[in-house]
Image 1: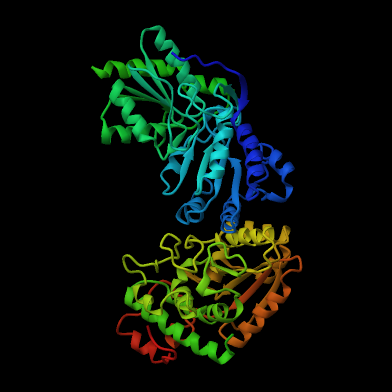
Image 2: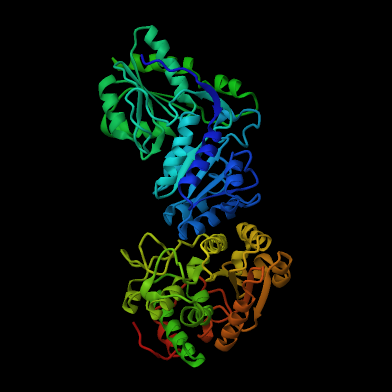
Length: 325
Length: 282
């Protein structure tokens, strides 16, 4: 089992913010827009570094998405920042018409995503955004695993031509990947659409995204103690999904668990299930949130009480292993 | 540049195109298309500084037009074809399977002249603001024009955009409202009274130009020239363009009946008899 350790605790939204400053330095066409939450979504650094390229839109997300699409026409690379729920669900039809159907080079940065947002409660804890964004034609959906990868994903999004949704959490989470967001197991760089096999294994495949990648690594370590060799895949790109990597791993291990800070319905699990059903039917279990809304509590309490911990992943792994025979 | 009379002649042909396209397709939106035919003709031929032979997505060095109420594709496509963006004969394909002339404007089908999909209402002003800001950032002093239905002003996003453009001094933007008082479920007064539009826009720090008869070509030209003269003075410009839905055919005028329904093959000749062929049917 490849050993991973926590280098620091950092917010993924800050990874985006720091990545955006660097993207702005590399490409003068990069611009940023926010709806009265530039500090919350960590765009204040960019706004300070490039005041002429930051557009304060006020509390008006629909207008912000339209403005971004208009800017993209003139060769700009707009990054739209807001709370994930309000820059996805609230503006779904805008994203559909002027970003995806019109295929514009606009990037949506959704901070405060997932139940680990904690105290703010269910109005702000979107657990539907991956589902909403991944069904849109032309959209690319990125769910980085830690601060470093959030930074790398931001830089990759800036270079990618086309609409992108970048999902980011608010809370401080383990930072365990290299600075460039690459895969330590095989030193492959962060590439949109290319899964990272963080730990090769033979008995079961754990496919995780976002904050749950760290939990999956912990689960793999616990399984290893019981003599079970788990393969851990960090699927930072939900769309386009690296189906090749998923199929290859499922053919090898014959059991799969998906792990996401999202509802069961429509998220990573469903994307993987579809791939397996079509190409390689395999016993599979979901670690995800039931068909329900969240509530207030600390981020830790949320992850534990909504069964998104390493222990929960391990439990589902045993369930999948039983179904293997 | 065309003379007023030449523009009127083209607009009459555009109205024939609108009716023939929609009846052939057995669907589409002739009412609002007929009402805005004069404005759209004036825009395509005289007002917009653009080049149909060298259409670019970025519109750099050219004016841009976004029609926010995408359902009036009959007038959009007819005036674009007549201006030379694509062959006039292609108007035959309107709403047919495989066409570039989709029911509502699309970029996916790569029709020269279309920069953004529209159809879901209320979004074009925001897009226009973005393009206008983009022009400012790239030091392009050309203008961005938008067109909106008056019923469309009931969409909340419009007012987000109106507030933004006024507050942020987007003064290279000219938004025209097709003020025909009609929408699908009745008159705008019946459905949702728009109140004093001029006062509303002025309260949001816009300059306002009123064209009292948007079906009079000279008034359209004069009003749009006035709007253009107001650009660059710190305020976005709103043009309230009073039109009559269905204008040009007596039995189609002043009703919302033909907003989204078309003439039957039997009724079409009666309407065309009121609109003589001028520069040639497609």
